[in-house]
Image (cartoon, rainbow, N blue to C red; front, side):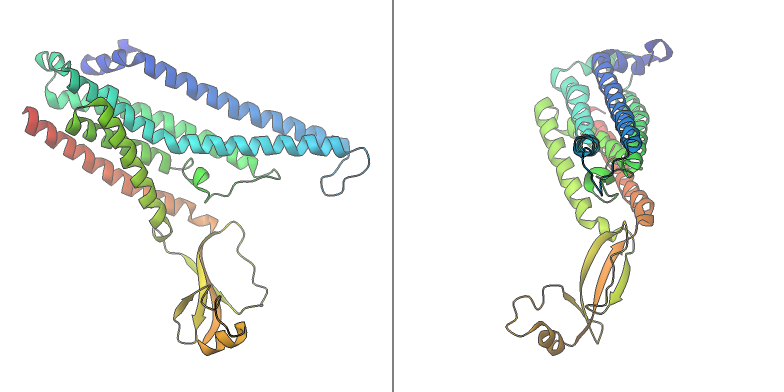
Length: 324
């Protein structure tokens, strides 16, 4: 982003943190290149293996090295997607730390904010710019990274090592959720920075807040959208729906009461007798099919954006109370 195209406080924010922005941009480009390069290499090895006449399922004499090289390459791509997904999950915490510490906490701690306020920028405009500039960059950058990851994950589904859509490192790196978490932590970091006005303390509290937010939403995620339920008799040959996320399972009595799956685990009686004694007639399975990916994503993102808006409103209230 050229500072010449920006005006007033926005230009100051970009100039103040241009080294950080350039570093983050360079790392993002390096990540894109790594993911795309890894896929192209995996596709090339796959094509070579397909032309070799060898098969993973029926390895014949002389194909051992080819099969091993082919599977090792696919496994490396799988591991790369796992690590990139984990980085994407940690990204909102780093965004929040940057806003809470270097962008706001440090200025309030050192008193350099007074220079901006003695110029044409009011406290409200100062905070608005501190939020708007990183918000625009975050929205654009995280959206692109999420799209690249989704593309790479789709390509990885054609390999022998796959990640499921409901795996945390995948779910948290695709769709709208990464943007929601990033914007939420940006707003939360600004609030913490204004309240604590200490760089290190604000960064620590922001990380703790992000951890608590992730744990809370991971706990309730299955309840954000109505699950589907299948019932079946034990030993009926029922097959778990392909690509579905398990949201809970157990037993059903004749009266419709749900009992946990291990209800007869420690019973001294035979399993059949235990089930009969408790009036159990069926098993049940709650699950989210793959088609629930977007509903779950959109509901969770909405929650995150509401939290972000609340944090921004509180940040402006704190600013008005302390600095008029």
